[in-house]
Image 1 (cartoon, rainbow, N blue to C red):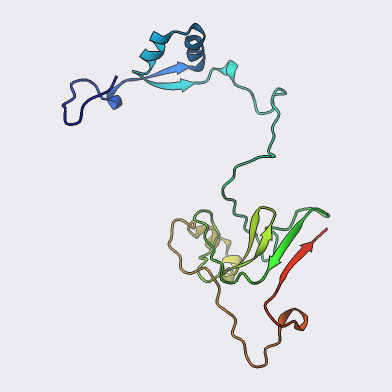
Image 2 (cartoon, rainbow, N blue to C red):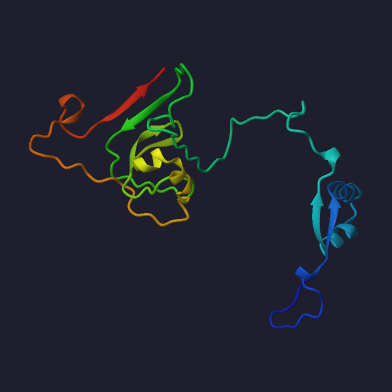
Length: 198
């Protein structure tokens, strides 16, 4: 094996200097079925590229396969509308009685923290959390008008993890003496509203 004590000079080949060989998956299957321990131990001394045999693969549309996406492990999905509006989270159907979102307009201090994805503009001071959907957060992004009029500017914008941006929260609105309370004259902070569309 490739074992050497710390500080000891190595006289043999290092792992990186070991030649690489390619073996089919069926070769490993034979070693396993024969319980060939000597061959299995010798395989540990070689760098091996594993090649899957054609007879051990299936085409994606093979009748023996049953695809199931009921469980998935996507860590992050960013959906951005292609135009002004709420297209990114509204269902693309005439009627969906199961669709609902919870709007909460008290989230103005929430930070937009995704490290990956592409918004098409700098999120500094431009993001506003507005609620949640099914397993997702809903945000309004206030994109510069120039990025909407000239899509190439949005395409050239860096990924979120490529450029350090500033504070993503928008600024508190300035309230004047003649400020009219929103939402039909109700005083106090806006409440959570559950909306069912369809």
